[in-house]
Length: 531
Image (cartoon, rainbow, N blue to C red; front, side, top):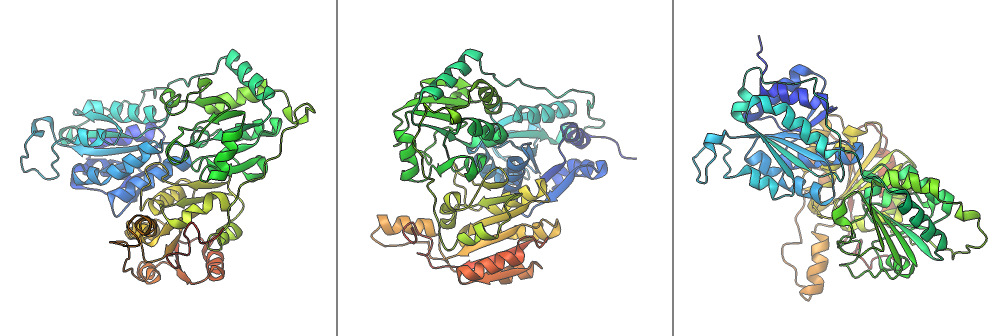
């Protein structure tokens, strides 16, 4: 007869918190957790081939579902392998939760003792990523530690967290599960009526306003509220790259903040309504962006307000609730003859090697996970995106090798969705072993690898900074289609954009995981290769 232990407390807390999927790799130090999950039977376990990729999967799952993505790994090397995923999640505000084993308090020392999976200070390692860290050293504290951590990730600005559970706690017989405990909730900040009236008046009086939508709109699931405001007012909207999917082109979208032309729209506006954006380095071109008009900045995280740009009106609020209230407050500007605002032509891009993505992918229920690769430069402005055609990237941390793991997590969260991972050959080799995960768990992601046999972005930097001298960027690569075939995965090769379009038509919607290798020259996807 099985005696309940700390593993059962973990499984009970996950189930009570609504977690239906976990990612990770079983280990001897987490055997109780995986055994409990298996016996419990309601939580799906997706086993990765590397803990870093498992963290990427949970990150993608969290971004698509809006719920915490959970990873269960051993302490020491397992936790260490999740560090890149935790840092990526922190930089992009994703609720990634890592549950890892920990040594008992008596075994924690400032000097190595020679224990398996020993780390001098796991908590410090995790805290260095920006993650919230909670320790459970007794069986009775496990349920509360896991449940409270998951609840905290759902409140305010999402951030990653780590729960470290000691071996003694996991082994504790009949560890408390407290299934009657109500998850804690934190009320989101609300906008005062006088602030809404002030925003409405400023918007009504502006002659050249623009809305700037960031990733906070997507994280807050505020896309319908933004669309309603835009329909009612006719305001033009610019997005950041991570906020690109918040609106579609038909809703007044005029550009994405990855080029000087779109930034100029923001700079010349006499009013900027910034929603859920931190005004980070990449979106503002190293903070060279100049905002000369009135700036209204709305964000659920008060630390973002005034961090880089001083707002004339800074509002700490949940973006979804703010937009819903503002739309109710605003009059219909679109029909007012006294507001003859200049039309703004959308700033779009096109490239023959990424145009097939636009032409082949369905018009809705699509997610593209873009890696740090030259091809990803062309997607935000060249592919029609919006709430039903999403783009996800590791935008702020710029994590190479992220896209395929994230795409598998997205597919797990949205099994009926078309999911495409776009990577370069360098990044693809970071997580190519996860082809096995896709096949084993029947996750029908299509992996598109642009193979220029190089770390192409770094090669560009070296060419510019080192007078054309290169080091460590010209790569010997495998036959990616043969590698996919070794995993039992259908694959195609494309040597022209026309062949790429045919390959996408063959594999997209096939219901099976697949790989496409697009062979390109190192200059084919460069900044000046196509205008």
